Image (tube, rainbow, N blue to C red; front, top):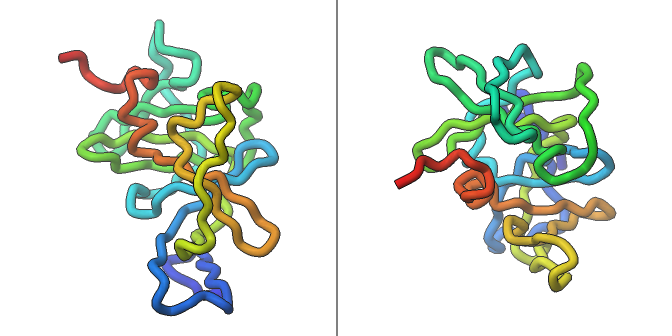
Length: 168
């Protein structure tokens, strides 16, 4: 079943148990992989536009934009996740997030849709030891043949490695 909600398609699996807890995720692409973040953290989605670069910023921080009087840092997720250099085209978007009391934007290759996942469609993060850093991955979501990497975007944006926190 496909419903339209604020110009974003929401895909609801037909066999979803009405009593199972459901969480909604905004899905986006980085290369060939599809990721999901909590829809409640998303403030808006914008096209990729001019960004003011900041000297001495980490490579994954593309710069800042002025969003209605608020200076918003922009993070390129492809670079942050070490997925190679990004190619910016008509599908590249910036997702503006409201994480705790901070506004931040993330650049992604494209936004797919909003998906509702029940708890039985979500799996814990597989144990990969020290092979890859899974600190910000909360699990994997599955709908039919699609596999989503579920990211705790608040934990990622508030991490010291992002350099967005103010020193105490």
